[in-house]
Image (cartoon, helix red, strand yellow):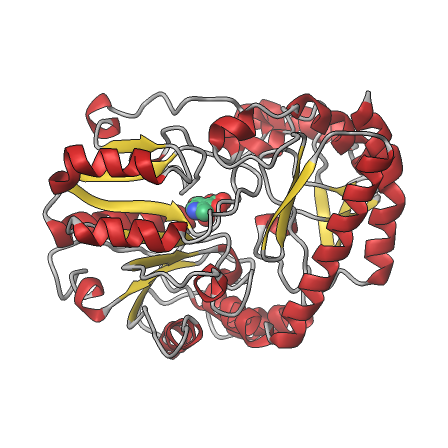
Length: 434
Ligand code: PLP
């Protein structure tokens, strides 16, 4: 018997806390029933009731070529037919590491000489921090308010994404002693950061930063911000961890590293989402000197039963292989058209808004002036998003279920899909106006 979305949600809530395995999926902040999907192809997802939606979530980033891209599916099927995993080394892992090292380059500089593959973005940032602490012999980490780096204990303070959606200041269960090792600074505020370094600079192991923040909606870095924080960290003997879990291989072939108007010098870069092509895979990379501090060569321990899983590696390789200039052109074009249509629909209804962009990533914010940090993001008229969201999903467009998330466009968003989004926007804008 096929259940409706509402029935599936009731069933799920009886079996799982909140009915979900990741909080934002519960649709709590948009006030409607989560859709339960059964299949997805190209720019579309289909729910248990047989309704098709144009998808602007894209599995939260990995589905950059569109869902079930034939080459990615075939690569995974071929890998699966050879065995699901060996808990031992495979040639494919080396190939993926080589691909990452070769792609992340700018003006002949390659900041990644060595890569470690892990299974989630959370693990990548957690390992990067352990590595920075191991490299510097210091404990303190600086993060920015509104940035999300996964759910490890030390990184949940004033975090973006689901933590922001649920308006949580952090998380219960994090020991005070652990939280005290993380200093939280307002984003885009070099003075505040300078003060923190003036006071505690000798104890700071690293700054961790989203390359271009996308977990409080899009809030692009001020011109030269990444370069300036790299210089500040380095002047104090600290490292810069640039988190490209969301932006990596999405905003361009070399991620935000390749497109920031002012080049910057990261020590460790983290990746996830796109690099796993839809399967659980993430990565961190940096100079050989830093990365070789990891076990088995060095004293910083990290391991994983499923690290470098052959199916995930196959999906990641096939995805990167198909992310050529043409694919980026398609993503950029679709993103520009959808953002422009959203802006004009909202303007037509007199809804105060800005659309902030970071390359092909964008989000709508209901504010007069473009928010530049977490405080200004939180000050927007966020109450306008739930009715906007509900009108879109009722019209067959699946947006991220939170105003604090980016809209993910794929290379499969063709004119037909974009047209369906454009058709849905006027009604949604009217709903947002009320
Ligand atoms: N870092 C950033 C910038 C992210 O956007 C995310 C997830 O959204 C993470 C880290 C955590 O990745 P994961 O959900 O795979 O643990």
